Length: 455
Image: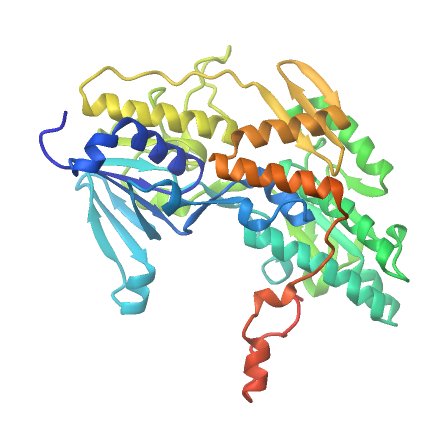
C-alpha cells in the first residue's frame, strides 16, 4: 500500500485524537505492525477524559479513574508521547514539542517530522479580565478540577459547621457558578444534589442554609436542548432554591466577594467558571488557515483548507455542516460531532494513503441530553422533548454507549449499580492536592500551602 515509511502525527489525546488513532489502528493494523506506518499521538495527559461524566465524578457517582481512558492501553500499536505541541510548520512538515524529558533535560523543545498531520488539540477555558477571577476562580474542564471542586464543596461545609463567625459561615455556604451551558448547569445541579444529601450528616448545616447561584449572561440556559426545555430547567433549578440569574454577568470576585452586573454582592469562597471555551493556543502557532474565531478552516472531507496532508476535527476545526438547510453553517463543536468526525477522519487518511476518493462528513445533529442531578434531567432528541426521570435515564444510556472501550463501560455501569444499592460517599480528600505537606512538616520544613484542603 505504501512504498516508504509514513509517520502520522496526531496532536491531542481527546475525543478526536483517541478515536482517530483507534480507527487507524483498526484499518492499518498490518502496516502498523510491519513498521510501514507509524502513528504518533502527542497529548499533555496520558489519558483521554470523557467530559460528560465530570459532573457525576464530582458528585461521587463515578470514580475519577473510570472517567478517563488510558491512552497507552488502548493505543497499543501507536506511539504515545506525553507532551505538548508548541508550534507547527506544516510547509516543512515539522512540529515543535515539549515533553517531560525536555523539561528535565533543560533542552527547551524538540522537533518531530511527519507526513500526515491531525490537529485535534481541543479547546481551553475562555476567561475574561475580571478582578479576582485568576486568584479565586475554579475551572471545570478536567477530572482534576472536578474532584478538586468536590473536595472544596465538602470542605466548605466542614468550615461552616465548625466556625462561630457568621460571615465566614455565610461565605462558605455560598456557591456561585458562572455559565449556563452544559458544564455549568450539570456541575451545579449534581453538586447541589450531593451537598443537600451530605447536609443530613452535619448537625448544624441544613440544605436551606446553602446558597447556590447560577449566573448567565444570555437570556436562557442550555440552548442545546431547546428554548422550552431551557425554561423548564430554570423552573426546576429554582424549585430547588437555586438562584438562577439570567442576563447577568460576573463583574468581580476580588476579596472573595462575587459582584454581579445587577448590583448583587455575595461573599463567597467558591466561584466556578464555566463560561465557554476558546481554541487551543497552538492553532495560532501554525502556518495553517484559521477563521475569524481562531479555528482551522476545514473542508467537508475534514482536510484543512489550502493545505495538503493536514487534517482536523472537533473543537479546533470549523467543519461545514452539509446537512444544514442554511448555507455556510458549521458543525457545533461538541462531543457528538467530534466522535463521528474522528472516525470519518481516520477513514479519509486511509483513503488518502491508498489513493482513493475521500468521503464527505455528514451527520444531522440528533439532539441533546443533560443531567440535573440524581433522577432528574432534560432531553431534546430527534424532535422529542423529555424531562425528569426519562430524560435522566436517556442521559445515562446515551453516554454509557459513547464512553470508549468495553472496560470503561462495564466499570461505569457497575458503579451506577452499586450507587443505587448503597448510600453516597461524602468524604473530602482535599489533602490529595498537597500530598507532601504533612511529611514536610514532620521533616521540619515549612509546607508551601495549607496541608489540608484546597482553600
